[in-house]
Length: 171
Image (cartoon, rainbow, N blue to C red):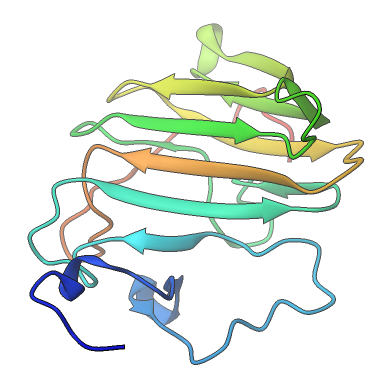
């Protein structure tokens, strides 16, 4: 396929978050036999330096939790400088509202901590400054797709993430 002037805007391979938080674009994703793909970064500063938004996606095919911090990974947090949107989509071609799973998504902290429950395709808007996570997928009947749109591109050198209170959250 010939290169065009706009080829730089076509991302054909997503990146994964590697050591130190930097993005790595592997030759092949090593996901065979795993429950999920993990976050696949499609747009970030290391991919498109002029981007002002970020885009991640993933496929969930089994029960899974992200953002509890209990495994040393991503913990509940908030971003004071940008909004995020979490889109949950089912893959039932006969019913686009059928998520095919139950999701628990935690928002807020301390006295304002709340568990949001989702079992249909949905989008959660997380305004800047609102603590979020963990996100737990349960009773997954068929693969589901999630997409995260950040109103700031993934940039480990400048992206600020403030830890949220863990009190009351599942671990």
